[in-house]
Image (cartoon, rainbow, N blue to C red; front, side, top):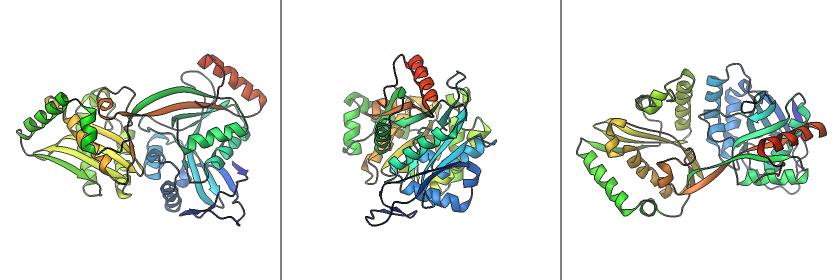
Amino acid sequence: MAYDAPLPRLGAFDGGTIAPVRSAPAPRVVVKEADWRSFDRRDRIGAWDALAEWATEPNPFYESWYLLPSLRAMDKQGEVSLLALEAEGQLAGLMPVCRLRDYYGHPIPHFANWVHPNCFLGQPLVAKGFERAFWRALLAWCDSAGGLPLFLHLSHVPAEGPLHDALATVLAEAPRPTATVMTEERAMLSSSQSAESYFAASLSTKKRKELRRQRRRLEEEGSFTVERLTDYSGVADWTREFMELEARGWKGEAGSAMQSQDATRELFRYAIAGAAARGRLERLALRLDGRPIAMLANFITAPGAYSYKTAFDEAFSRFSPGVLLQRENLDLLDREDIGWADSCAAQDHPMIDHFWRERRVIQRRSIGIGGKLRRAAFATLIRLETGRGARGLS
C-alpha cells in the first residue's frame, strides 16, 4: 500500500546530500508498505545505509546492520512490514511497523512500531528536512489502511528532539486524539566536561579512592590490560568471548543472556559484525592475563552513542570490574564526534545512574487514526487507560 503526499520545498534529496533549492519543484513523496525481505538485498541496503548517514536523529537499532538481523532472527513469518518514505524514488524515511491484536494484555487491535527486548529505541530514521513530511504521510497511511486497528502506538521514543517537535507540529496542524501513556527516564551522558572532571563530579572522594584501590588489587592478580577497539579486527572472537562471559553470570542463569536463545545469539553475532564493518562499533574490555573480566559494546552514531551491552565476570566482583569498565567508558566525553551517549539502561539502574548524571526521557505514545468513529473509540480507550482525556504530546 502506498500513500502520496505533497511536500513543501524543503530541499532536494539525492540519497547522499540534502541541499536547499529555491527554484526546484517540491519532490513527490510517497509512503510505501513493503515486506522487509524486499529490503534484504544489496541495493536496498545501500540506500538504507545512506539514509542512516543523513538521518535527522540517529537510531542504530533501525539501521540495516541491526534491524535486518533482528527481523531475520525474530520475524521468520514476515509479520513485520517496513514503511518507507520515498522522495522522487529515493529513500527518505523508514520505520518497521506491525499490526497487533494485543495491547499490553488486552485484545485491542492497533498499529505499532516494531521493537523487541534488545531494541532500545523506536525512533524512525528520517532524512534531514523530511521530518514533517514523514509524519504527515505516516498518519495518512494509517488513516487509509482500514481494517480493525484503532490507533498507532509508538514505543521507546524520545520526549524531545527534531522528530518529536515535527510530530507535535503535524498534530497541531490537523488535531487528532493523542496521548502519552508512559514516561520513563534512563541514564544519559551529556556534558562539556572532560572524562576526568566528570568522574570527579560524579562520585565522592571516598568512592573514587575505593575504585583506585580495587584497580591496584586487580593489577596484583596478574597482567591487567584495558582494551579499546574500533576496527573489525578479531570481531568473531570478541563476540564469542562476550557471549560466554555474559552467559556465566546472572543473565545466563535467568535465561536472558544473548547466548541463551538461538534468536538473540544470531542477532548479536550479525549485529556486532555489521556495526564493526560500518565503523559503528567501539569495543571495550578489561583483561587479566588475556582473559576478559569485563566487556562492553558501544554503538557509535555521531553525534550520539549508545551503550548497547555490558558483561563482567562475577568471580571478580570484589574488584568491581563493571564499574572500572564504566570509568574507562567515560572517555566518550573526550571524543570530538560524540556529544551525548544513551545508556540503554533501565530506569533507576543501581550502577550506571551514579556514573551518568544526565537523564533521557523515553515515552510511549498513542495516536488516533481513521475516521470519526475510530477516533472517538480511541479517545474513550485513552480515558479508560490513563484516567484522563487525550491531551496530546507531553
